Image (cartoon, rainbow, N blue to C red; front, side, top):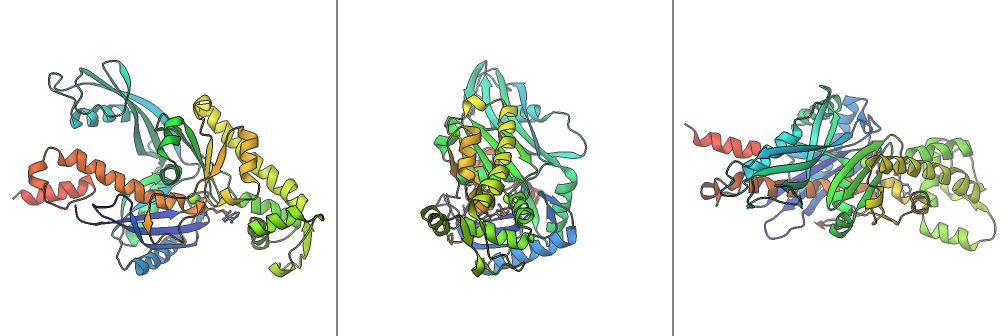
Amino acid sequence: MADTILCGIDVGSSKISTIIAKQSEEEREPRVMGFSSIPSRGVRRGQIVDIHQVTDAVEESVEKAERMAGAKVQSAYIAVGGPHIESLNSHGVVAVSQPDIEISHDDMVRVIDAAKAISISSTREVIEVVPREYIVDGQDGIKSPLGMSGVRLEVNTHIITASLTNLKNLERCLADLGIETRAYVFSGLSSALAVLSDTEKELGVVVVDIGGGKTDVCVYVEGALSYSSSIPIGARHITNDIAVGLRISLESAEKIKLYLTDEKVKQKMKEEKQDDIDVTHLGIIEGLKSFSYKTVIDGIIRPRSEEIFDKVLEEIDKSGFINQIPSGLVISGGGAMTTGLIDAAKRIIGMPARIGKPQFISGLIDEVMYPQYASVVGLLLYARDEGVVDQKLHFKDFDKIFRNLSLKGSFKKTFDLFKSFIP
Ligand SMILES: Nc1ncnc2c1ncn2[C@@H]1O[C@H](COP(=O)(O)OP(=O)(O)OP(=O)(O)O)[C@@H](O)[C@H]1O
Ligand SMILES: [Mg+2]
């Protein structure tokens, strides 16, 4: 396998990030070569509200990352999130085609197709089908039935759907820029790929990605994604509350919110006896010089953080897996850094909680290792893993022909290559 260029683009409500990495055969970790993150335009709660603004912003972000990487992006994996995301669990069953030999890839593809045969509205599209477990002749909990013998093959899957309009709008933005969309990945899932350890996934864990305009929730049980949803409330609501509470603009409130997350400031306020915090040096345009620290932390930020976790708890309840997540919560997204947020999570959910920073990549990563970039980093890991699956699925039967070809990636590429052999 030759080196492959992977690209992920996260079109968030607060920022648009692009990451470009090289995937080589020798190293498992994608090596980051280019990265950019710019303020978002034309996106609200994960949904496009102005396609021209989004196209311009994506172009700017991609160009910056391309310049840094010295490589051109031809195709990309795109993170999608927001309340238009829905999920369901579905079951598929097929008869094994050659029960006297072994379960083949073809059987696995057929059983997943059977599980995919669900009726969804014409305005929605399936973006993810995760096999949670296979069942062979009644024996459950099987991760991969390939090569096993059996007569009846079943699968339990987790299916994520998204609004077709939103996907089409995104595809149009990217097509205008000459970028092919390889796949849409739920932003909660891509964050989970970047922040979770295998042990956490095995034990059971919830990833909560708190962005500017929405909060994604992903529940992992026994190693597999088992519930996904997105709540239309994010860290920007905290900024809003500060703006209303202190009677200042959103920009000034954002400045204050970020200032309050500074470890030195937190330490100083802990040590000081007085409650007034001096912010003269922030140059708040409304002329605000100081305010009560306790009022903002306990009276404004805390109730909104708790409200977010009340909603997260509702989602965990809905998933039906509340007793199967001993690893607790891993919180990513820019909102994860909000002062007191982790304590609010522990209080409301009654489980351990930690901040999830992206991992599992190498190269130019200094700028990237923050919770708000978990979803864009996860896209690289998704792309890498999809490449591996594709090769296993499509190369097996044509092993001899393709053994020395450095073809990587999608079914379409495999198919195109195939076509080139046909006169
Ligand atoms: N250091 C920090 N302290 C507190 N909040 C922060 C910090 N850095 C970023 N944020 C907040 O995180 C939010 C943006 O998060 P993020 O970058 O994950 O959003 P996004 O991915 O663009 O949006 P979404 O996922 O909702 O579409 C903003 O509300 C911002 O105020
Ligand atoms: Mg986000």
